[in-house]
Amino acid sequence: MTRKSQNCEPKERLLDKNKEVHQVLETAMQQLSTMYAHVAQQRDDAAKDASLEDAEGVVESFDLLLEATTKAHKSLNDLNRAIMEHDANASPRSGKGPFKSAKDLIESLD
Image (cartoon, rainbow, N blue to C red; front, side, top):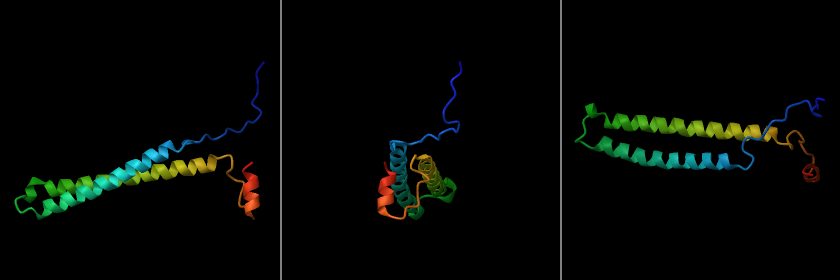
């Protein structure tokens, strides 16, 4: 005998129920921001260093690193937002609003 599911519609699962992924992504973005500031200062110092020649590519390499850091930060932010949006839409409370009063909102939490 085959048992049928009572609800035929698939339920979306939360991707970050405990907000652990969010925290890891936020930490990584903060580290990238700190790194960017440090590398930008090093790049400026290198640009002012008269002993470095353009052919050595030091300043250009710093520029490439800064660009890559910016792209990495944006990618992490995009992923973080996508996960948060997915989880908000998949939440069992999604679709219960808009609420006309605080009382309606509180009652929806049951």
